[in-house]
Image (cartoon, rainbow, N blue to C red; front, top):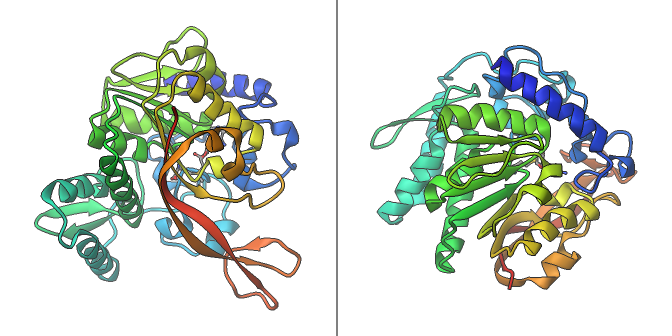
Length: 351
Ligand SMILES: C[S@@+](CC[C@H](N)C(=O)[O-])C[C@H]1O[C@@H](n2cnc3c(N)ncnc32)[C@H](O)[C@@H]1O
């Protein structure tokens, strides 16, 4: 673990020095604004956090306040890296019953392979912390509200990919949180070479998670002397991607992270992938930017160059205060309600 932290510290220093490059463009971000991940820079990790990181408040790894069993107000009042979860397994009959109902609903009439895939992603038994429940189905499963969301996402994605017979051998995920979707997708699609790219803090957590899940499979591409290896789970620092990626990616994935990036950063990633012969991109993102910093993904050069094979658009209510700030609950007087268009599963083909 100390070796991992040492490598991370060096990578983080490199990130600081290069943060103005297109993979982040920190110079064009407002001084605050957590949805753009600026707060991830210059963060020292307190001891004990990496091993059980799901117990702690760490923004931008895919978890929401409800995944910790607390309210948004409580979440926001806590400092970064505060311990939010104490009990390894929660006994909460109401939550367990809810999970049972939601799972049964989701799997009604599903084929056995779909049920297997769902149960794989629903499993949250790995020792990385988090608020877990033991829920009885045909067997007991250690899962969480978070893994339930991830399992629903996995089924949505698999259904689309199967319909279009996308069978990737090389898969790359941009902005993968801590690696759950990445590892589930690699396992469920029979991927041989996985490539995960994210910011340094996330690379560190993904290394911790994937090393526990698949010991010996993880390859850290965090410095110039490392290479992307076939047959491995490669965790790549963003600024090294262009130089190190020497193979075509069959399938790129993105969930809720391209939408937060600046246009130059969106194009940085998609451009590298296209120049390397990208096959397909499956993503779930907001269609239109939420503020002036975010790039308009729907109109980006790469997205418009691709052919949409399938796209399910939903509209999601979002609340704004009278001064135009986005807020999370409609309890302020004079609140405006806007509906944002979100794509739940768009598959694009690049020719
Ligand atoms: C809202 S989180 C989504 C995480 C995960 N994909 C999910 O859906 O659960 C956004 C992710 O994008 C990553 N991210 C943000 N800016 C990035 C950049 N410039 N390059 C790579 N990853 C970035 C964050 O670190 C984080 O993992």
